[in-house]
Image (cartoon, rainbow over all chains, first blue to last red; front, side, top):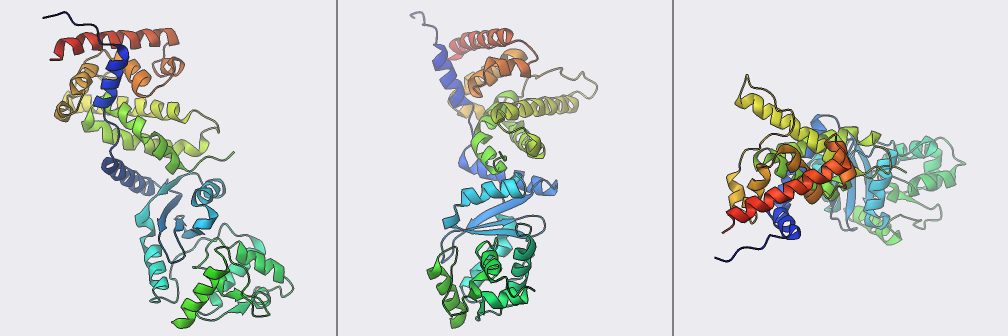
Length: 210
Length: 163
């Protein structure tokens, strides 16, 4: 038997790294779910989120312990939205899909015309002052109908604040669930929408056909 | 600058924390240590100063959680026994026999505690010796020596056991 050469450190380290396994995807998902559940129990999960597919593309749903706090279209950049949630609400953010099962199911039903009204706890902490007042009044616009920005401003207690009402709609943190898509211009034209006017028209058509 | 969402921290460092926990504890307790580490990190995360070395912070937490788990294990095994002052000997794990490098893993477990910790933090967590020295309450030079001694011992054991 010939004498062996010493194993180089690099080889040892490589073998060691192979031997001490990291995280395979199945284990990682299982541990992540356990972590999210423990965090929720310990009151440490300030923001839970998931994404869902929809006819308007991928939607990010985020909830606090109070209720649904954010619905975001893909065009907003889901990572950017999560980054702003970390700054504005809390960095204690984890993906926790089961916490948003109910919201996901209700959105599914809405897009399938099985649901006309969302029955979800919501958290409007991302909207302040008059903007928040406007958003609180939007669910009063019935499914399938529209209201003008001027009418919304009036219903919110400040008929002159038409531009502020429009601004409240365009900064709505909970589109779809808080129905800013039902607010249109006084001249009957559709007005802007974060996900695009085509998306807004599609939502109005969906509700009109039901 | 605001903290990044904690989800990103788990995605980025979940792997290295698991390697550290497995190497220090064996597979049986590693998952508990991983969960405990990230739960403790989540609790303290909002107070972590911006720009902190997140990996070093997490490995420090994993180090402390591993010591806690080893103490709990020692209490279970020998109710009246002395608590290990530092990282003790992890239980051997039959699963490791099935993995490439499994023998080497067992050799790591037989290292003296400081050598094992130094090898794990240097070569599995890629921490610099300055940070390892803090974890081991030692100096960077001593940490470097512990890692070098650990590698030398591993080489000796590994050469002897390899077919």
